[in-house]
Image (cartoon, helix red, strand yellow):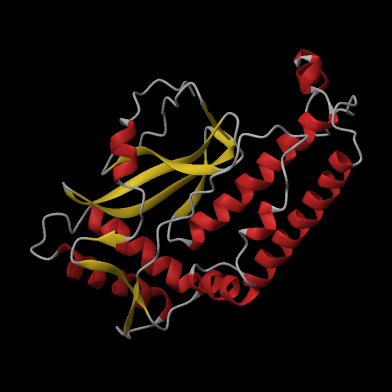
Length: 269
């Protein structure tokens, strides 16, 4: 799909970085619902706010009733005890300007949550905390192995073609992008993307695969804006010389557009 839509201004994008603070307070979450039931409640709540409850006197209360009706029909759950989902702004994953041969992978461990906090956040977001910790452990191991290659002085050596890059694509790359250091840098950015996706979900964003770009995730969350409580969709982008990813707004409200023009110094997945 062509990236043809004009993106929001940088000032506008910075104005709405924080998810899940809606008009009238934090978004309510059923205290006793977990797993698929919780996911169903959240989805029904969001859809109702966007469609059938838009013109209601109290859209939030209307959406709550619609969400409970959906859960009751499938699971027989009728409790309306709530906790508030009052999350902090997602991490800003800011990095330095070093090249791959100088980039330290230690930041991947330095910024990681403690096991206890990670498990609690994962459960709250409907994520399997054990699987999440295993994935992060694998990435930490891969990062250490890549750092060892750089420490051993192999950064400028020719690299073997990665399995996920075709021969034709590999041959088109300039020589400097076919070195061990360049390959390590790309792997580091991909690990950083995976971690950023998890952090966004833990921070309250809902994630789904972009149907037009198989490797990219689309995120959505209800955000309080000057125009009221709106559903915002975004993608993760990074600056070309940095590995840290940040959220960029794609569309807002009822728009389902997934097209966006990223800045010349930005890269999307």
